[in-house]
Amino acid sequence: MALFLTTQSQKAKKAYIWNSSHTKRLHNLKNYPSTIWLVSNAFVRQVKGNNEVYYKLYSAYNPKLKGTVWSGYLKKNLQKLPPLFDSSTAYANYLKTSRATKLSKLVAQLFPNTPIDLTLSNYAYETHESLIKNFSDVQRIAFDDNRLKTQVQKMAPSVAIKYIENHLNALGYTADKRQSMTKYYIGITIAGNSEAMDNPTLFTLSQKSRYPTVTKDLIDLMDYSHCTIVLGIPK
Image (cartoon, rainbow, N blue to C red; front, side, top):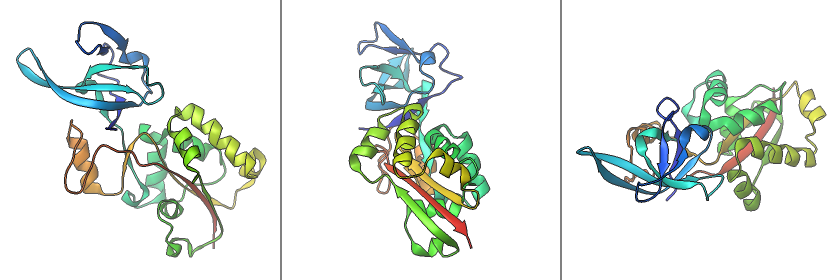
């Protein structure tokens, strides 16, 4: 089971991760504000006469960091994919502000003079050639190697970005070249350690449920691994 969670900071100032018998405090969530948590089990425990949802979980970055915690201290790490946006401005703002897209934000900063483009981001997500008819010199940088994607997914964004930058440098996209790409626009679709969705109805459904959600159309238990950058010059 892989349900990806982040800390709700306002509730987690005195939020503890306990051992399985709930007799010993193991960790304080306030010390892990940027950690992504993976659920291994969800269950109900009676607390003061109320049924409360608890998670058995562990850190996506350090499996040894684990325990049991009340679900109210956490929220699902849900990510909107490019098809859910209607403008480049809206998508660019989302990449800057959403905790689920921190790695995308860091990748965008590697191309400081190259604006975010929604059409190119959609092309990074689904390679329909019609999406790039208004662009020239389109360059698609896909991290398709399964080993590479697996390694990046297991890293904290601050570590993964160094790995991605080294990979870009090896492909010839050095810091100087990235700095000079002023005529280009960039599309970014990166998802890792998040529940990434392109359907607004399912996104809302997953947001509402505290449990891992399973319906005919939604299996709220898996992450979407994707790491693609697209560059192009508007015609």
